[in-house]
Image (tube, rainbow, N blue to C red; front, side, top):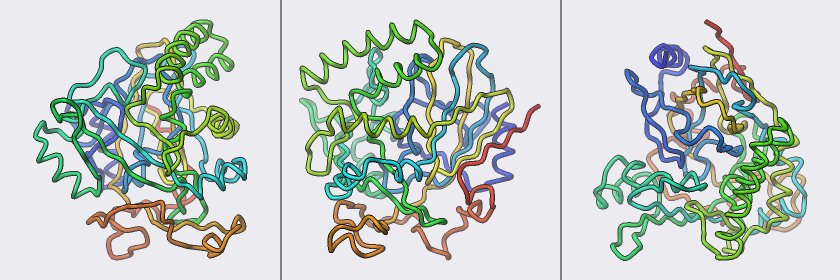
Length: 362
């Protein structure tokens, strides 16, 4: 049960957190304080690879998933990817361009989420994200968390947050460079392409039909009409990431994917600063996976360019990246020994490496 999973996770990581600022609709599970449904979106919607809440100044350090009910048909796997390897394999010219320009997130959340949309982030309204409909209270929470906010729309009730970030981070333990962003999730070509990749793997004709329908919608809505997604990602100067550039990123990620086939009672522990996760689409509506996460861990503003340095500003092994603008926060700083109690799992060898899958079958 979800409560059993919570007890098991708390015995491993006593410092769980239940503050969720992500983009997928989630529900707190009955009888728990820290366990949520993984994503309240249709089962046949793919969820692209991502590090949980990587667009925030302080994402969770670790993630914990558990399977309450396994899918019985094809699809539904939680795919994993080593984002350190993605950084290494990415096209060097594109990697350099991303480093030079940085990335920009424009997050737009309406007061009430949309019911009929292919944009998962648009399904949730800002009162659900911040657990209040009081705009002043939202502003206070955003200030505390280092998130800029402005209100737009005719009634000034549309939440808009624009942040600059760098596309890479240094792993807090291994000091390796990591592909650390949400570019591959929030690009208008991602949904149809993820469906196509799933079709290629499973040969389920329903996925191909779904891909064709979504492609037509996305080409018209985003490619022709120019509408933007609820969480839009661009280069740091505001220029769009091209379809070709996005496909280079996506193909690099998919080259490094592994697929975790769930069994009931499985527990999956992930290092959220190195290993991404995503969901393969399925038409099995019985699948149920829940998630918990550790306390937030503030991203560093330094990045090791190492042997990729091509200019004076990149020549230093560790240098301040001007594209990153993370305000001072009361959250834990990376490298702080005094306040690293929440990161005690880092000392365990199974979380110092890549992600570790711990299967505990009932």
